[in-house]
Image 1: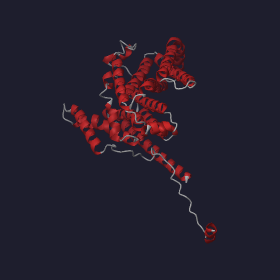
Image 2: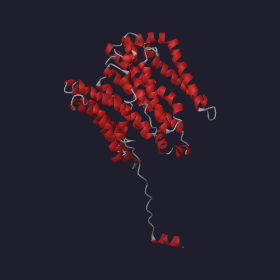
Image 3: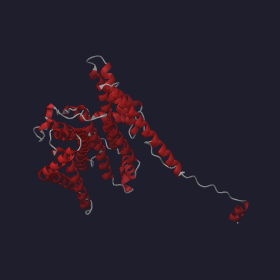
Image 4: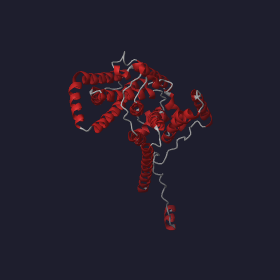
Length: 425
């Protein structure tokens, strides 16, 4: 029986990957032949980016049960970080790439050391943990900026410039996406340590406040923060438009596969158990705090990666694109598709952007565009009344569905007449 289950699982994997490859080829041909113009190309890329953000939120809210409105804050962090790396590189300045990449690696090493240190003590206070991790982050990035940025920057510039320009650009873009996701993960980790101690409603309010703080800081990147190239409230220009369909498709595929594998692991089951009953999960030995932080960080990393993809598609960033009103979009997508349904999020994310930013924008009368933001709250209200579990409920396509072995039936006992007499005796 286990072999048959494994065979079925492999079949679903092949079907999913072959369908994805077919979709990739079809869209690539349509883009290459010009049958999809730049408008619809932007819609597809935008749909993929918002779906990545929504998948991260579904992990945090749908599977872990932590109501969050902070996804757009981490989306913005990933976008601006990745954009700053590539912007500096195109202006012959490798400092952004070096500081973010090696700073994140050094921070991760220090985090491991801090975690091992704190394990030596019993029931360390949350604020003490937060202080140690903040100090580790500051030390790592200060060391990179003050000591290593110059020598590592020189070596990195020389090594990458040995490669052909097209290849070096792709390497820098890849590092920029990783850097944006890493910065979103680091900040979400620091933010999540103290804030995840709050209850679900209070946690949601605090994450909304975080999104507002990020937006205000982005408005003042050229005054409060030392990033004049971001130009604050005027918007960042000069970002290379390096996002292509292969980058979009394989980034989304990567997130889907990683999230699916996490949810089907023991770590994923611990994350889901926290949603079902925190107290029961704690009683059976699950580290509830770590499960919350892990889900929050992974979901934020997904948002940071989506931000880097989106920034290099638009080639322009403005803080107004990340205000708190926009932060409701991933939440609406997750609720529409169905909490705890990756399939629902995948489908609804694309439908949401195609409908609101594509079809309705094209076919509504001039000046009627703003009514979109009246229509979809009403639709959401009707959805919550008629189908609160969302369009797909908890349905998953076969590849994303948990494959479990059926319960074993008790073996039938065949008793002969002689055996019956012996038992009676």
